[in-house]
Length: 575
Image (tube, rainbow, N blue to C red; front, side):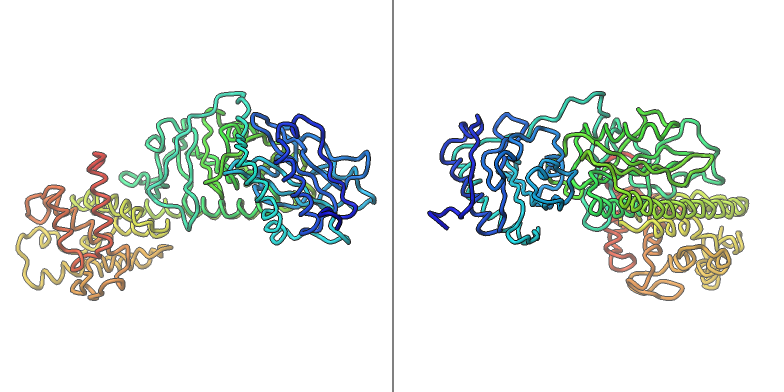
């Protein structure tokens, strides 16, 4: 070291308007950053860029180590591949391909590409600088996790100096949009996403979630009149993708984004009866312009869907970060589950002007096969669900002559039970089990003498027979082999939280959750409809009756969720 400057280092300050506008203090700090990178990180080459207020490009303000006549570019214009990647990464990263920044090879002394370590600099959340280090002493390699901390500590003084000088930088405005962006309305579903993921956002739905028939996905959307699958609707109503399928895709897309440096991963699921939205995952939120570009990339592959009818549900891994701008330079579409009726569309997009390598294409195809298999299983699941709904309705219809009130009571109970199950955040399979169990919960009454059931006063023996109807239903339904816990849910829907119910005197959490839900809903439905030779109660009086039994007849947590559900329905006038 001589006078604080490493031997052999040649710090160069370009004679440009950028350096003149910075002033001596900031220019000195820029030089110090490069000195310390050589000393503490061990980089033999370095270049520092800053974006001055009002500019879109990044100008070089200091560099060292480049051979004479082979200096780094003095300006990184907007849209430069390195800037696009830095904007996406938002933290230090390695450049290991010549295609990422061809200019870095100009000073190379051999055929081996010198790895570069790139660090974006931020001032109060605004991106203001870019530091590029290259060629470690004695051929060492960079370690991003360790070297980033050292580099940021070195740059901290520069950022402090910029703040002290009143340096104000602003993100450039997004480029003008070529065609109108759909109305953007964000709505958080009643049912939260699984785990700790950021909320999903709806884009392009005029009127918001209220115009979207199934938010969240409604496993019984034709519950009150479903007997057989309806014929395909030429106008195709809007539908929602099942929560579990959305969660599965978010996880797959997040993995792809990490492995392939993808800017966005999208999926469109074909359905002959519904018009479902495109799911789009990105590490950072997508600007309106990028959302529109994504829809534009999908349009040629979806000839049966008018472009104006396409909608988006997005999720960003870092939802709190500013939205990405720029363009999608590369898109790889993949058609899944192709048939005469249509196909699913899987797309991987990136902003860098760099084609996917053979290895990346093979990885995308492999993940596409995984998605295709999962979608096939999901469709099979839905068909089974519809089949069981159909059987359940047929059973109720067969008893209408003997008990005319059974079907409307069962359907009313099922609708509220489904809503409460969703309110409690149960998995789709549990919601389906509760829905079908609620339809069939009183089917055992069809095996009893209707004249006895019509009596106002029952003897002890007759009461015992009536109370056997959950067991009779379980015996009658056991051979249907439901794929979820329908029979057990029905058997125990008259158990009590305090253990004084029937038939098995189960208590508290030993009672299936579906049974606890149906027990509350049935009691409320009986009170408000005036069955059992009682006068019908009002909405609030029935809620008070249910609340008074919390901890005795009913699960307190389920009672609380039921109160919230019914209060919300009352406020909306939807009950």
